[in-house]
Length: 73
Image (cartoon, rainbow, N blue to C red):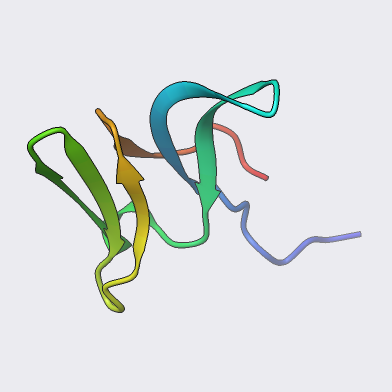
């Protein structure tokens, strides 16, 4: 069986670790390529925003970075 679609290397939002319901969460999978987002910092607050809509995806402590996943999924 031939698969015609390319591998998807998703964007990962990497944030400082914090404890949520017993789990440490540091990476969140995002649906768009890294260039579709902007990161800003105002004092201690970091924001990740979708460029075309202005939607804020993350607002909190930093540092924050967007990376392409090294593995497809």
